[in-house]
Image (cartoon, rainbow, N blue to C red; front, side, top):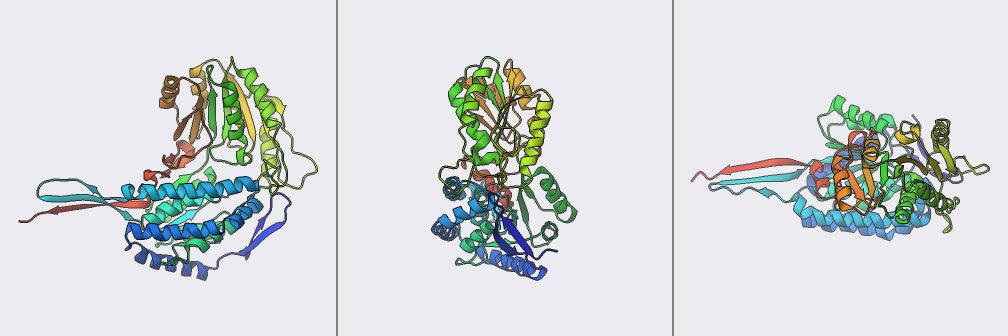
Length: 460
């Protein structure tokens, strides 16, 4: 087993951090400390828990500039965008705090002679396995509602972003009740073993479909506990004949390229009504050409490197396969030469067959594959032709068209004239290979609690 986890800067391949892996003894001590914290934490009132959670958030706010810089150094996001993620993290936390009283209140069912209510009780120790692509908001989606519900959290952050896991533990681990959030540095083998620990009461995982299947299998082999899985997508967009063309093109290009396309809900395939097809391609090509690749610490850079060293070659394979199948390459489509970083340029592909790899495999990079459609029904059929179903967006000025298509689209969130966005007041949930369970909104509390029925009869 390796003794050190090494995090590498995807821009210049320098070492950002070396963090020791936890020994079996340290893992055991951390789990026992978390379980002890739960026995104390669950007894506090919700208002007391809210106050302490706010103290943890204040600690993160005070360390915000260093946290944002560490995100940039670890996974390559431009620094301005890393600061934006930090702000989004606090927005999500505040929404969870606002949702908590109603979501966690007992459901009272009046009946003469009886006391009947449904309590929402904490599970215990939540094991959160977080991804690197949004290293702040992905954990906060679990941490804050879990804590407010009365749970404690063991956080295993991605190997690409270990400093972010440490930052969460430093903020939430030494409050009035210690060990509310505990950072773990684990190998894949250690992660699977910990899932089998009887003191783990829930597992939350954000990552690849392959990883989600492994996590789900590891739980099923040893435990009867629930698992929340957020596994990404192949999110489609439809530009209808009545769409605002400039608005749609600008938003869809941003939706495909923000965070270098490394978003679970990034736009990964676009279907454009044939009457707008060539103008859409022309406008998208001009917008894609404006991106500046480079050092993510510079304000002039609006697209940093990809986090994974292997990602550019993977994207190149998808592009080459599409071109070999008859797609037109209009912008980008070739790994830049002479750069140390893991760069791939914003790329526009036209006339892409719907069974091409770039239309079916999650790309997780700045690719915009586009295909023309004759009508709404063809667009719907192609949008639903996917194993994934996280989000889908419809670009139209006709609300009835959007509503009709939304009823038949296989996705957890349907947008009209918006994309690549999470509203924390709405549940974030998937369809098919995009996962199971929900985070955010009041529904994000439900899988982090268990129902207890209270059924008392007045004996008098």
